[in-house]
Length: 400
Image (cartoon, rainbow, N blue to C red):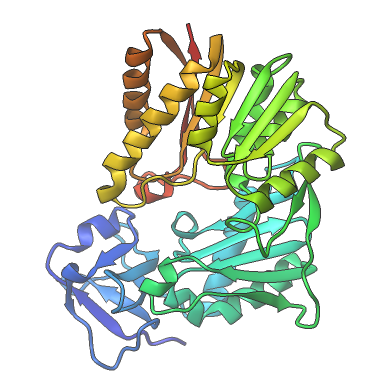
């Protein structure tokens, strides 16, 4: 039985937590006993001494406690008696949520705060489980997590890829390596998504090797690309490009600044026997200008840049970048052409994207029609009480 050390909040600071948000900030804390080590799981009490849940603590972080379990409002809270069984139940619940996702060998199984396991990302690629650990609290219990994943999923590999800059704020060093089996190397392998083959290089790839969160948005291309000329900007390993050709695009041009990503994109084309494609390793902003000067025109343009804004201080510059990108794209877009534009920055919402579109349209002197809003795939659930879980937004619009 666990007797958790106890931490006390200032009066009334529990209200946001009890509504479901799992972060507690330093300014909200009344008392932390000296005998609690960073990374320990603690029982959190309100200013009026009520138990409101358990979480793990780290004094090095501005988010000093991340909650693992929160009391239901107006209900007495009983902390778990066995942490391993508590974690196992949470992991099983997360896995059950993803069972209905079919036609893919790439899924996000655990999405941090959205699955009440803050700091933990778990992705599944066929028979390989890739784990990303971003916080000290999860680092301290990771051996239990690995064992649970191994027992339930029985994967061929478990690979830890914990390279996020968040680790530095938590006092952790970057780490990646094979967790199971210890004596094997993990080489690139092939997965299938909606009957398209993709090469996955977990070790050198961005994130855990693939943009799983765009799966449902890639499928939407089937309504727009048949017989069309497609420009895939920030194409990475060619996810949108492959879908475009699967759904009948006449021709695809992909641009990305990463040569290793371009090489994998070309390989993805070859293993699917696709034709009529070209990839360019270049800065997207500069290459779109070159396409404009060459009087190239496209029917569908996909704009899926990396996060332009990771903090509110960077937002103004990010919006300027989006406007520039949209303006250049509209100049090389045929009339009745369609643009897919995405933001993976949590602090840039649909209104911000729409603002940039309107500014660009006004400068070009054309009209547009908004067709559809897009968001991250369903294995990256959005929790209303945790706005930070909603990070990927997109708009599809037509040039009139």
